[in-house]
Length: 218
Image (cartoon, rainbow, N blue to C red; front, side, top):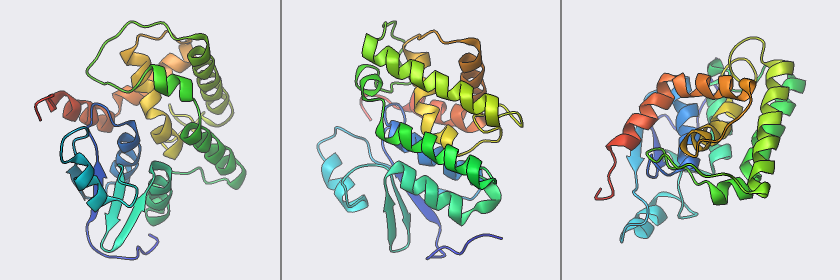
């Protein structure tokens, strides 16, 4: 049974450039996983009128934002949490309370951490850049791939994702998967298998296709 939303209108998700906006990718994947139809409004970043458009869409002036009638939700993880509550049949969190707590810990660690990786290797789906990470960025990568291995070993036996079935945690780490591909970062076999499973998802392919259609002149 679905949790009642505050409004009954079609949801609208405001996103940035598909090629560059890692924060937009996360709730977009979560919403697509529910199977519910939604409107997508793209605000291209770094344009003369970007700031004005962003201020009308979100109280922070940033993407993403989820709009449901008069309700506006901002911040990627908060949007994913709302989606998981509104559409429990999508099972975007593990059913077991203890496992769910671990999943939330992993999601929050991604939301607030790994600054060196973010800074050195920004998301750029169309690029292919051979760049060796710094020691600090490599430490972030090692922590992430170690966390992936731990989650998949302890909780992922039911499927190819971090907690078996696709979840909010996978949404949160999806941009890391794209960064490893863009910058040609070598990872161990377990992390590589996880990256391949994520990149093979139809929704990830759809996002990549959208990014491929964008141009600097858009």
